[in-house]
Length: 87
Image (tube, rainbow, N blue to C red; front, side):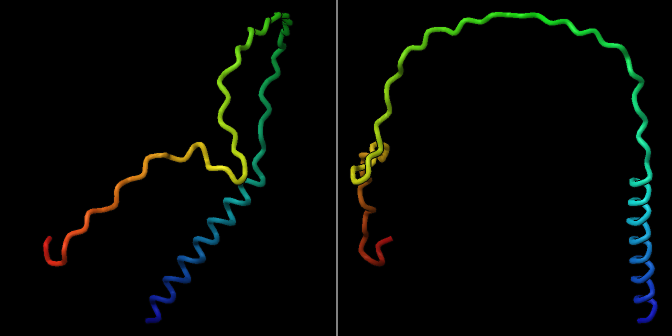
């Protein structure tokens, strides 16, 4: 039973050491800057015209106290009932 506890402690210590070392390596890492290259910028101007907008059909309004126009109008028939034991 003692060897199981020692193995767990060893695994926990190794895991903790790995986490700490990854943190140290990521904190101390230096990022190299990419070499700067001269860039040329060109500016072009374009004009756009907006197309004429045609009106679309209006959706029904949702008014409080009125029935919902988006709810279905078809009501399903009730489930058929059979006498007990007739299945």
